[in-house]
Image (tube, rainbow, N blue to C red):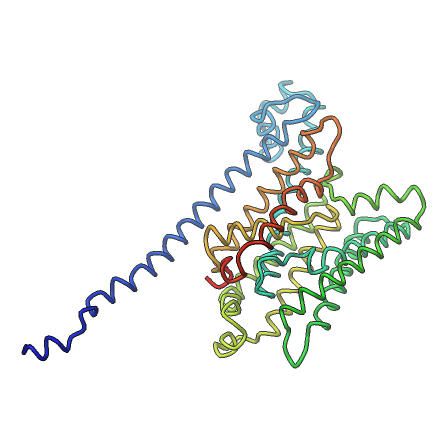
Length: 375
């Protein structure tokens, strides 16, 4: 090679592969981190459920609570019939504490996933079901049924989902302009409609009969204290449906984060995808409100933390957010019934104490892109 040819070769040419190679390694590290965090969250969740099933006025060790649960799941366990545990201990664990802990976990997972979906729709980490008015709409539906006296679980669940769907449709229609859904208009419309729905709920509360006020406050403050095993079916089914939707649309949701134009160029029907995601978030929110009341900020805090830890790829983000949401709300419920025992703090108050400072910190912090929405 001549000296001229030598000078023609850029000195930086050999360095190009080394500059590009960290990207696949970074993605692989994030994937491993996501799997590790999901596994850790599941193990921690099992521990918290065991502690929650043992804590209370009827004293039990977490290991004893776990054995009682195992005895119901696997027939023939000797300690279920040899007098090791009293009928009261068995009833308290199986009929009261375990359903409560499991419902808190399901509600946390569902609300966290709803937050992931709504943040993907508006491309903003400050969005969550409560901020977009979906929770308020579900609350209006549920409270309306209570006020009218049709307090059956099926009626409340149907009304809560209907309210969430109406709120979603109203936000969608206002935000839809010039053939597209403007994310900024979604947020602004959601805040306005959420305030309106809250005013409707307040009006229903002050005009209803006195015996209905406690039931109304249940939905306003959020609680899983009255959970039964039958209450687990609706949020579990909604969560399964939502996970199927996310699995099918995962790549399209990732493309949506790059921008509408890029997503369209990649063959994604942007408006159809946003509609599906909003309806799925409404399903999750409505079922949770029906059985646990208005619990805010789970869909804000957990998805944001998960996104910081594993990035914005929804194939990694969703498992971490779902398991993290379950762990977060189950732990919050354990705190709600133990920090001021024998009195109980409503679950929505615990999440607000955590979520409001977190939200204010986000408001003062970096932009949505810097928060990781486009990573």
